[in-house]
Image (cartoon, rainbow, N blue to C red):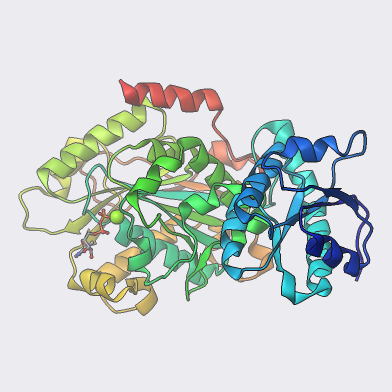
Amino acid sequence: MTITSGTILLVSAAPDVEELLTETGVTFVPVLFGGLPDHPDPVLLQLADRPRPAVVVLDGLSNPMISLRLIARLTAEDPLISVILVVDRDDLVLDAVRSGARDVVVRGSGPEELRAAIDRAFRSAQHLRPSIAEQQDIDEPTGFGSTNGRIVTVVSPKGGVGKTTVATNIAVGLAQRFPVRTVLVDLDIQFGDVASALDLDPEYFLPDTVQGQARRDPMALKTILTQHSTGLYVICAPDSPIEADTISGEDVAHLLQMLASEFMYVVVDTAPGLSEHTLAALDQTTDLILLSSMEVPGVRGLRKELDTLDQLDLLSTSRHVVINFAETHGLLGIADIEATIKAPVDLQLPRSKAASDSVNQGVPLLQSGVRDPLTKQLRVLVDRLLTNSDRDPLPGPSNSTVDSSSLRSFRRRPPGSDASPTIVLDSTDAGRTAKSRPRRAASRWSRTRKLVAK
Ligand SMILES: Nc1ncnc2c1ncn2[C@@H]1O[C@H](COP(=O)(O)OP(=O)(O)O)[C@@H](O)[C@H]1O
Ligand SMILES: [Mg+2]
């Protein structure tokens, strides 16, 4: 077992932790206290002119609550420090990771475990250092991974029109082509039901992905994603609506950027309307799915939403207007809808009993493969989201980077036209390299907020 060079600091008020670390055989700098401080200053002061430690082995025995606070403050002060917490209770593991600990070792498991954790911490520090340095340089986390994934966001002005049905199905459809390279984020933060639609029992939720180590380290983030049987990764909405308050628009933007640098497809389900979180997602979105039913209030809402997004310059991405619960004998026809929204309808999803059956069973239609007109149309939608280079994939690592030279968009058709949308190569996309997906400036984000606040 090799341990890379770098200072290991022991911060402890318990002799047992020092003993355990000594038994590992590593060289370390001890900073010993009578009682643990809850602030990093007294710890870092002890280092005087020495370089910051790469690894801190922290006593979680004396006063676990103080230790958790210290981890949060220490990693906020210096994200390059990997903290390993030594505990004597398993139930502290989750809290420690949420606070920003890199690893947790239970005292009884012996010095080998601690030594292995130190080794892992050094290995991940090698990965983390350039990422963090790059992030600080350019003030956004685009340097995390090599992928330049598409961000597909499903929005509608009203609830109950099928956003979650569409988002879960396209996520599963994409994951069937690109297992472990597709992630679904439930941004309906207060009342999201993706977990139930996919029959998942998540251990971690959205708030866990925007704080602590997961916010900085893509590897840590991946370990707290929920896995679905199709190979899809999922970030579920928090259990309690109150937790929505803890998540900001900036958190959402940061998370989606991180995910897009690690995954080929990031699918985002949203709450009805244009919340701060949805706007933050739209600011990052490459493929927008606008959904409405055929009812008059829904269609009027869709028109307002299109107008607002146009004003905010958030319609420039590839977009798909999708009418759900489509039927031929309703009050409004597709031509009426197109005239109202002054834009073409790209796809119609028929009303189907299979949809509610699948929600009740927690198995999306594209997973069960049930033969149904709705399933067929959902497949069409998945196909339209694929970039040309992804359309006939040879699954595997060779597909890991999206070829942006073949990004396609749908040309707007005149209202009333019922031909299927024309696929065109967008010349503005043709010259982009995989690394240069446009990211909107921070100034743009504040402008967006101001406009919506009006
Ligand atoms: N095309 C459809 N046919 C029949 N039922 C549908 C269809 N699309 C969605 N549903 C049902 O409508 C309800 C609301 O859908 P959901 O996807 O949760 O909407 P939203 O996320 O916009 O609130 C669910 O019970 C779902 O099963
Ligand atoms: Mg929903």
